[in-house]
Amino acid sequence: MKARVKWSENASFVAESGSGHALVVDGPPEIGGRNLGPRPMELLLMGVGACSSVDVTLILKKSRQQVVDCWVELEADRAETEPKVFTEIRMHFVVIGRDLAENHVRRAVELSAEKYCSASIMLGRGGVNIRHSYEIRAAA
Image 1: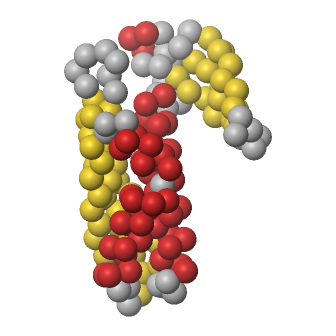
Image 2 (image 1 turned 45 degrees about the vertical axis):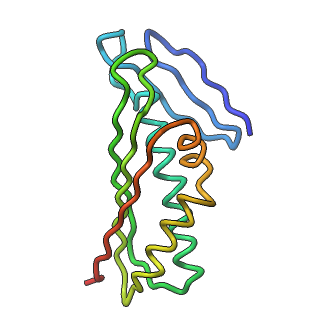
């Protein structure tokens, strides 16, 4: 895997993935940012959520669950002093579908947390306390 992050101006950078996608990353105004894109730590948090969400939806599809929608709401706490690393991440999955079996949803979240989501597992091994929860909603 490769990526390139190139300085644009002030606290703004253009990040390019090896697969050819690009996005702007920017710092807060206090350090010269212009709010042109997510902050680096926000991007890291979003990456963890996306990684785990891919797992959960794929596992549920393989279990023949009728998922209509799925998202994960994330909250993170950071250390007070430098480096201001994540100390805890709370991930709450909302899965919407028809006749969803709770045991399948629970298992999908557990498998992502314990076996498949390389991003969250890497952070967890680095000392971040990661909590997972879920709720199931019936599709309209």
